[in-house]
Image (cartoon, rainbow over all chains, first blue to last red; front, side, top):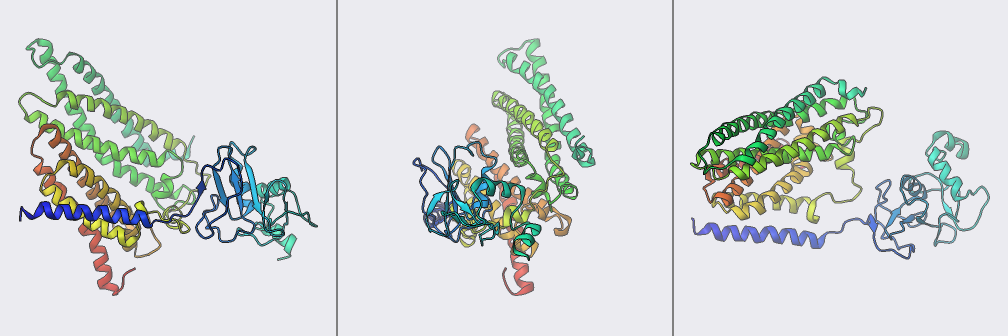
Length: 167
Length: 322
């Protein structure tokens, strides 16, 4: 029996290491932040495998998704422009961050601060601010969208919803 | 004044912590004077007085350690009762995450109890030996414990002062359950591989403790402790609550679950403390820690048996697994 103990111990030890290494090799964690984006470019989003940093939801559609790039190159992802505004508000680098949104009219990444936002669009978190590259009737600019998000004047507010959509 | 500080449990808890710290501070001052003048080769009046003072510090630390072991479950019980006044909290999980001090405090408390266990074991060996071979080590360790206790008291006060009862906190389902696809388990494990690892590590730990392999114990037991924590929260806990979505390390401490969490966590932490302390003692003194290892094996077995029994009884009663 005593002779068996070192053999069994070694086997179990190897088994522990094997289970851990195999699991680590298989691991596919959702992306939450990407480092090293020094050029502050919009990065492609891996759909269904990237988490919104604000609401923690998985990002399932690229339309109306958003990205915030800190001056040090760290990039965060959002499924709704409203989420990005809420998340950014208490960050020290909020004025220096480069912000991107994926537009629904031209289907590409544009500077979020220069984009226009609808107020009754279908967005992931139902805030209603769909991003556009071209100005449209009833569209608002970034500062106005930001103000409305921070004051709760969006479609998640029943009064605003009733006023804008009638439901 | 902060409403939390008017809670009876908090008053009792904080008063106890302050009194214990005060007693420990007296022992700390005495210990500093002992460390400066201690010399076993001398047979002077001063050395004789220092030896008597050393006994005083040992008595104080033993007294404090008994109460510290009682105060950890009382702390958890107290924050569990605070769920009634902290909005959003359903158990201690919400209250402990009410500010950034809570989890750090809990972790520090767990480490301090390990420190006390180790000190008691080193002290016991030291007193049984003829020439107090570990006196210097245990004295420095005593000072380290005092520093840790001071930080703990500061965190205690900060934590309770900064619980705002006007701000809702998250409940345990939000903290441990709804992770939107993110895997909370370490090393990329899934539930099946985690369970496999849990039972392999249990068997490995038993063999290492049985054969007194101190270095390997120091590596494997902390890993088993971590995997056990995740296994209880993300697997065994769901059978305790009989709900696959309920994942929480604190709810099982409540009356609704017959306070089984106290048995589960105390047997796990007790086993980890004793095995690690035994291994450190063995490495420091080349002595035999068999007795400690045997107690550790009993506690680990109790822990694994209780966890496993929940699965077995659930399966027998309902015929299915969650």
